[in-house]
Image (cartoon, rainbow, N blue to C red; front, side, top):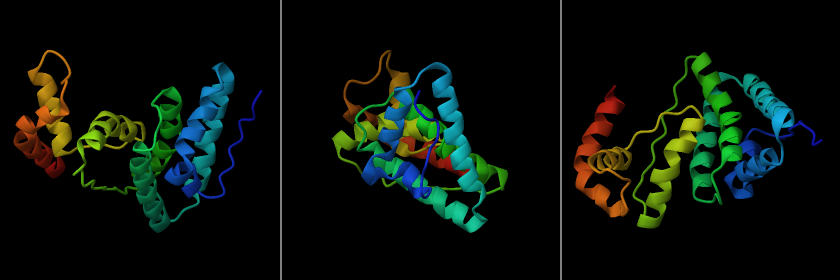
Length: 180
């Protein structure tokens, strides 16, 4: 049985994109099943929760900002998306987001999504899933345009370039959501 203990010297080590922390944590989780996995997830959330709970508001906001930034950067370095990735993010990043909410704090993170076609596909495919696992709402013109495109067709779009037809309307919808 693998230990359920998680040792992170700092919260930055939980999501550090340069070391592949999310993928390493996900791989560790994927090697477990049943109650071992459940205990490991509980220990992970507890460890992050303890570390986050010790932060004052200023450090919590700074940590949350760097966490989101590392999540975003990790998106383009990931090899796969599976339950391990989902669970790792849900039991680390979502703990930070819950603490922000508990303290009445709000984090806004703006992505300049002027991506090339290859990165845009990754962004539109995985960013909502990744940020959703963290408990974050995601909105943007390209994402809204992609939703409009999906709704206009009986099947998912074959060519990401097709979202340009809905870019203007997607931008207006994103602005409305952000205003709300």
